[in-house]
Length: 287
Image (tube, rainbow, N blue to C red):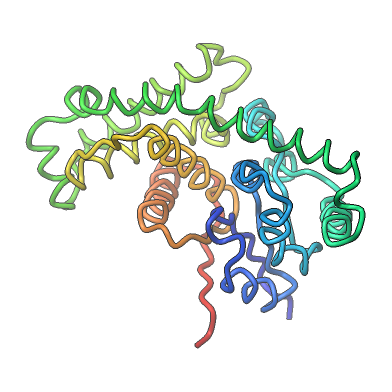
C-alpha cells in the first residue's frame, strides 16, 4: 500500500531536533521542507561548527529534504502555475546537501575558497535579517489602529473570549487581507492576481497578507502586547512566513504555540474561501 506523503515545513528551532530525525527516519515518504529563513538563521551564526550542527539531521536524509527558493522568487510566481509547490522548490537539493556536508566534515573546510564562500553566505544572511527590522516596526506599530478600524468593542470582546465570530467580523478579516495584499503587491493586481478570484488565494503575497490579519487576531486575543524589541518583532514576521509556507504543504513542525495557532487558523481561513490547501497531516513520534 502506498504510504501517505507528509511534507512538513520545519521551524528553524526544530532543525537539529530529535523529532525531525524521528520524522524522517519513520518513512521515506516524509519530507522536511526548508524555507530560506532556515538558512539565514543558520548562516548568521558565522560558524562552521554551527552549520555542521545545523545540518546534522538533514545531512543524514538528503533525499528527504525540500529546499524552497528565496522568498523574493516565490513572491513572483504566477498563481496560475498548475503546480505551485513544484515552482517554489529548488532542484538537485540532495546532491548539494551531500556535497556541503562532505566539505564541512572534511579537511577542506578551512580552504580559502570554502571560507570565502561561507563568508559570503554569512554576510548575506546578516544583511537580509537586518533589513527585515524596518518593516517589522512599521507593521507592529499599526496594530492598534488596524484593530480599532476593523472591529467594534463587541467584536474585540468576542476575539478575546474566543467565541463564535460574526459574519461582519469575517467580512472585516478578509477585507483587511485584501487591502494589505494590494499594498504589498504595489497595486499591480494584473501580474500577481489574475481572475478568477480563487487563483488569487494561491499567491504567496495574498496568503501572507491574510496571515498578518490572523496575527492581529492573536495579538488582540492575548492582550494587545506589542513586542518591545525589534528583533522579536522581526521573528514574529518570519514566523508568519513559516505559517504561510505550511499552507502549501501538509503542515509544519514547530514547538511554538503561537506559530502553530497561526498556521492552523490561516489554513481554516483559506479553506473557508475555497483556497486549495492540502489537508494537514499531523505527525507525532510514537512513545
